[in-house]
Image (tube, rainbow, N blue to C red; front, top):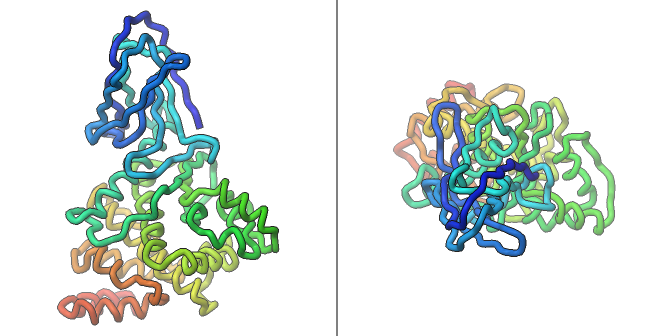
Length: 365
């Protein structure tokens, strides 16, 4: 998607520099790692914002157009409502130092560009937190060159999805791949055989992560982004083929009343789904508590067949009994059951077994 903001103040030639911020409702936060392009006719130059949101263009311009392009230094791209045709882009025209090269996005003034900035920062923070000193230490990064689609359309109770289409080569050949497109658009559930050509088209057009940005708060967008990126890290652990089984399960057995199925199929795909969704919801709740200081919880409803396990893992993370990395280390391609995962955690971390079992007992597990 492209948003524009017109400026016409007279100016002399200068080196464009400034800051890009977003407002989280209480303060202005730097927008980190995004591409900045200064352009006037056929003359252009690019750079990136740093951790403070600052940028400096090393070429002189007179009244350039300044574009904020969500192609990040961390190797991910955010799509707006124009989908795969262009990275989400915001452009200020005919900028001068007098009317400022800087930009602050707020929820009330420019909603869609604001959501791109929030998702960008949440993704940037997720990648940083996977470092040796971050909250997600020992959790693998998502695959390279991720594509995240911010869709400002009312999708009901669908907060997002992580179909990993750009990395799920299986989607090109699996019978019934149209179901993936159905899932992304939340139209309805389709189970039909399609040609390889159509499946390949879905692979080109589809994102790795979909985020429903319609009418969301800062906390909701930030936490949901961590949730979906947790699935992408799970993809890094179990591999493309096994993750394809997970997606296939959700497509074939989920519906509007039971997004993840009922837990009654006994398939590998269901097992991977149970582990991945429990982990992702728990990370989402952990982030709400540790980064956002927001005590609301997600995924714990009995509506989900794994809801009690979300409560257990969330409590173990928030109470600092286990770290995300410790849980993630047990989530290899052989892990297809939450009950088995809890058993493995007890075996691998025996000093924490009592606390783990206490939480499970409290949930009747």
